[in-house]
Image 1: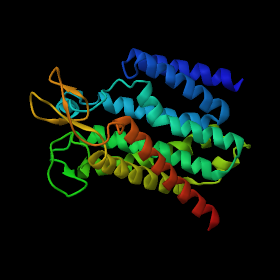
Image 2 (image 1 turned 90 degrees about the horizontal axis):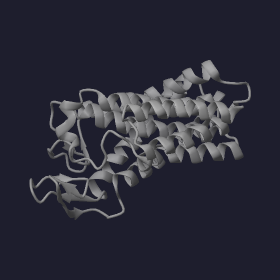
Image 3 (image 1 turned 135 degrees about the horizontal axis):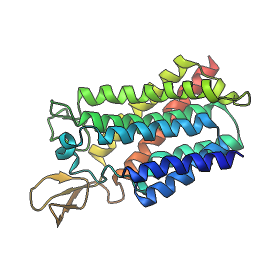
Image 4 (image 1 turned 30 degrees about the horizontal axis):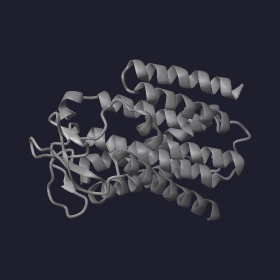
Length: 276
């Protein structure tokens, strides 16, 4: 029964996202597999938290798209997520859900929320921060950088990051309140304030780590035509030159590593709460 409900729900949501061009064909397929497993092995709270991230992020990616076009032109990925992006943002959450199904413990749930808070906070910071009237500053040295530069942060982006993390905490509480079952002891272990703190700490911490990785280790290229530093290896319809970073440290790799760190922050916060 659970697998049928999960599959149907995932097909409906992924299908709608594909029609709205928020997901590519590969991204939709990956989302269906991930959502089905999440619902089957977890619960509506696990599945719904994933959907809360995806829906909110997809809506923000369409919001004032023309104003954000210049800042986003250098990003490695556009608004239509492929399988790589889906797995980079939600794959670790699925692994945690599987581990929780095998060895139930509230720490897994807290870690999962940390992962979801990180990817949500990072996406909100990117989408909303791109609208900032202030030029971003490098997270490394505080110097002004061009909009869209990896590792660039703004007060608006930081506020959006914090809001995104807390949004996941609130969404998780609402979902469990509405759909939770008596058997979900791990989810039941935390109240609204604990979930808000886990979401804020995991989301803000993970997104800042994402910015740091982007500024220091992510592979970056320089356009031969316009001279702009970008995340992708082509710009202005020409091949770009790699100028720094490790070749394998793509935007997807940065997202996966930062979500891991956000998950660890969330798990630590949850375990400390259980020990107090």
